[in-house]
Length: 596
Image (cartoon, rainbow, N blue to C red):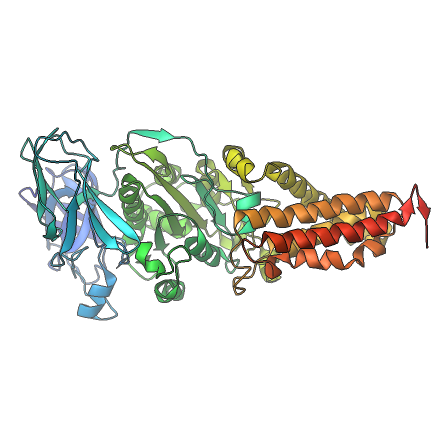
């Protein structure tokens, strides 16, 4: 990025993280500025009558009127290149581990550190088919750097490059992120890294329809409420319902190539758990550390509020960079409610007219700008990549009618509503099956049909049965279960089997913590087959107690822990024994005649 001559001004007014300065009339909106004698990082968010309104991304306690402000005349940007994977950043891409080594647990205002190590050398292997005179375009892969054992990092021509042919391509060797490895016919240098504005989406050739599910290993998600690769989902829930734990599980087990975890305004102890657990987790795909394909952005609730607001943009920009390489990226944003609260505080500081519950009127626009950067795309160089966004929402008191949740539902197509009663009952994941929904079921159905043509039918029947069970439970609370006929009581029994044997998973059980798709559909098919056959036998005169007493009922519920992924013989054996026991019971009841 070309640095322009800086513009200088001075502070005229301070309102918390919002600072007003004069003398910056020639600057552009969203230019980066160094504010005060400590050179705190800030961003111009409004220009009016020669006065710039600046949001400061660091603690500005002690700043005084009259201190200098210096504009760098460039937008807030992140550095993209080798060395991002495995790093822990704050909201403005400062590496926290390096800052901790230099200043300790509390950051010194104005503290700086390079986003990527400028001294480390990376082995660059150029593309064999390229050379001087070769045609190039934005997104063309010039070579590869092995960033981690799990992630080959593709060095691409930056999107804003105008040259059409290569003038020079560096040979294989060791280079730093500042070293020039290529040059275009227009004399434009291409280094191992480049800068990109966080608020500007990276361009792509075309957006594609979503067709493949993001497999998470959580049965309630993958089968009932699937999320596609390139899709958007929200996890709303009150305090303690398991939003963070659900995102942790998805980050560990989902089949995305790269994970970007954004801790936006969450409590320090939750981010501590992430920072301490993720490096210890073993990636089930590679057998190596999960951090070898993970980027963490930590911006806790006690950090400056303005940096919380920009952390989502920083995270999605990093995700788009790896998407352009052809990777599938999953973003965990925890939580967008804290991000919206940052918007509300900054809006109040700027004395803007508040809308619903004090949030600014542009809240829906900002949410849309974030979620619409997800998608499955054809990158500029022709590679297919995707960005999937999973945002946690923390409505006060678990009230899903509050503005952030309601506006989020406008821009996402997958809604995993966490249920307080399930969480209190230690039912994990506590995703309620009544309020949750997914609009991706039809798009991913062909993928599931190739695996099992019965997926959609079994899924639909199971969801309908759970809804019927909810209506019956209202009757049971009034007059008790004995007032129901056995043909309806079997619905309650089967629903309990679905809850205990399919929906509930144990994050501490080595077998049950992750279910692959074949096992998921096999469990649900077995339970629904049990229900269909049991209903027929009850109509032939068998009492419900005979059905409940069958050993196969408990055996089917325990398949989730007794049969490992890939153990098709174990599942088939359990289903065979179920059919044998039901056959024996059915033989006792013919044409409504009971045989003792």
